[in-house]
Length: 114
Image 1: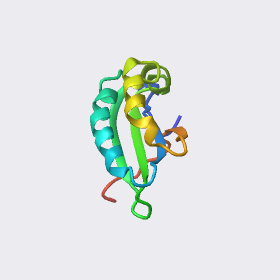
Image 2: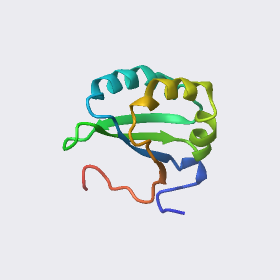
Image 3: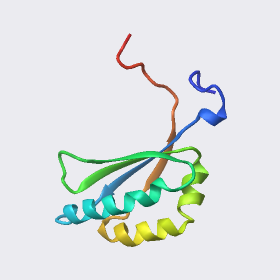
């Protein structure tokens, strides 16, 4: 157990996905994502998300989503009708199709430094 984790219920899962959008379709992707983001927020175990655009490559985005458990994402969200809606809105923008990774926190620094 990490020194920062008091018990298993305090572990937060971080979903990390690099999204490569077809060049020239960034504006359409961002509009569709804005429409689709409410669907993920309604899923059990969802905490929050961020979508960030890479400065050096306009068509690359980083999606970070925090979940209570891995299963909340892999089974709850992906098995939901909301996921099917999001898939219809977003998946045609990706090339190649993104790989999703999941992480758990092992260390955190204090901010600002003490």
